[in-house]
Length: 146
Image (cartoon, rainbow, N blue to C red; front, side, top):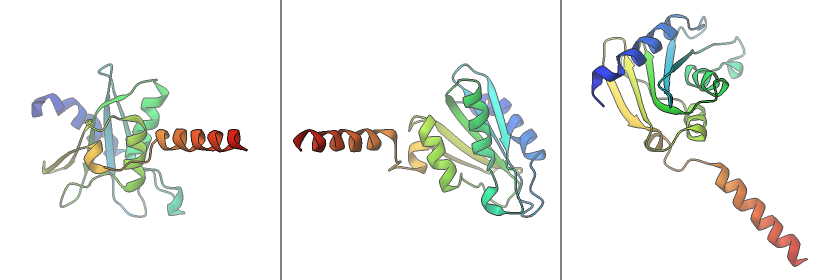
């Protein structure tokens, strides 16, 4: 897709980044997701003094998307850093739960340097529900043999 088609998504991610709550790391992140119906949802990182309770911008945006009953078409992330920053491992797994492998993910700095990838490239061997389905089928097969 042409870069200009990402402009609304970048704007939403930048606005979300400005609202991030990151008093400890001062690492503000904004994310925006264009949904399957063309609507845009966004999220920012929300830190906690107990770092383990921190929620990333991408997961907050995904929560907003789920609340609307939508699925992702594209994901944009904005950071004020020297280089574009991809989603963390947890966010990659959560993205893989809701997005097809070919969904574009772009991360960009405030200066415009960008990383272009896809959900599948970020997490090529994602753990998905099909593994749980297979495990359940195997468990049932073992039960029937007993």
